[in-house]
Amino acid sequence: MSLREKKKQETRDRIFEISGRLFREKGFENTTVDEITQEAGIAKGTFFNYFPTKESLLLYFRESKEELVFNILGSQMATNAPAKEKIKNFLVLLAENYEKDKALLRMLFFEHRRLVMASGQHPDRKQHGHGNQLRFISIIRDLLKEGVENGEIKERIDLQVASETLHAVYFHSLMMWMHSDTDNSFSRDLSAKIDLVFEGIGE
Amino acid sequence: MSLREKKKQETRDRIFEISGRLFREKGFENTTVDEITQEAGIAKGTFFNYFPTKESLLLYFRESKEELVFNILGSQMATNAPAKEKIKNFLVLLAENYEKDKALLRMLFFEHRRLVMASGQHPDRKQHGHGNQLRFISIIRDLLKEGVENGEIKERIDLQVASETLHAVYFHSLMMWMHSDTDNSFSRDLSAKIDLVFEGIGE
DNA sequence: GGTCATTAATGACCATAGTCATATTTAAGC
DNA sequence: GCTTAAATATGACTATGGTCATTAATGACC
Image 1 (tube, rainbow over the protein chains, first blue to last red):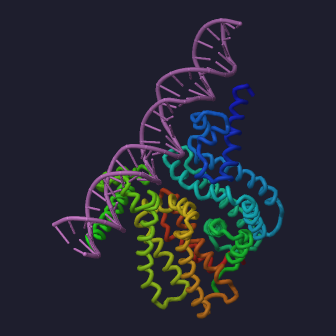
Image 2 (image 1 turned 90 degrees about the horizontal axis):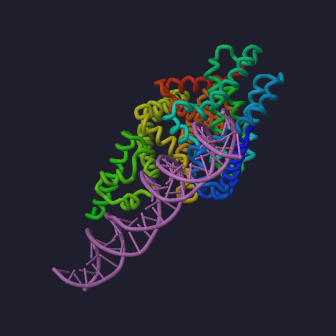
Image 3 (image 1 turned 30 degrees about the vertical axis):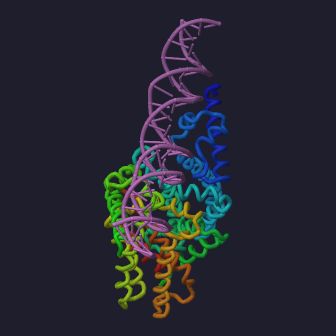
């Protein structure tokens, strides 16, 4: 790696690190780009050479977080528990991982949607953020398929609809938890709902 | 109503109407407060006498939209169809109503969350937006209760968990629909998922 | 180790949301 | 209809995200 590339990486990392710290300390809105660049010892314009907007930083936080999560999940999926258990483990693991850093997660969640919108203009990054949801759904669908093959799950159900429904439950629990100031457990709530979806409501 | 109050109401309405039109025409971000006030024939400061921020306008759009929806729903709830049908009608009616104005709805959805965050500071308006979700959930729970009494729904399920699950499905369908550019039907998708939750996934 | 093209850093500058001291309008009391 | 206090309107001003023409650093090539 050339000197140039090394310096570049260093600057990028420094911006990333300082931003993260400031966002956690003072919140996203209350942190200015001026502060970040000042603390990083760079000019304001330099910031925008590395990140197109202040909000785009959140996208990168999100990516690094999700990569971590997917890695954790890889191991879990290899077991041969029943499909239902695997799905529960999958989603509850996500939940537990998120529970570790509510503050930053809230920012990602609440701020990042406008990014998705804004990036609608740029066709090249269209599904950042939504793309990962599809990835989640796809994993769940595969697990459900296993379940059908093992006879744990009704054959006649539409797997796409079912996996989306489970993802819906996951996402909704996440949302409720983020809105709540109390420390209700996200993973516990989620767990109950997954059970319900498996069992069904109707008599 | 005094002259003063009448003028005030007129100004408020004019801002509201012009904003709505401009937002639909050019999008939320591409519409400036300057434009709005110019077209309304008022000074910039006046705008902020009526609405604390540009984004807060969306809150009022949302309110007026939801009031409409709740009114429509009132009649539906009075019928004596089976609980499942009522819930489906309830949610699908919401869906159909939303399908009429995707553009503005998207703005409300994507922009409004940061409002919720920001209003976290102001304790007086804490649950605008989230409050209505609780209202939805509460209506669904009442309908489920009817269902239990009529024997259409399993007695042992936790009604809170169940109503939240149905709301989750509703919300998720809404989200998927808003992310999609194609004209997949929101209400059709939702309908399938509600059926699934009633039936259950597990064998 | 000097030249030059490429890449990155810079900060003055712009656009726009939001503030606030001041000016104007309204209406109540006389 | 005059006086005055309260409500409302105003626009110059501030704060901040983002742009871009200019300057500085780098490294490939001779």
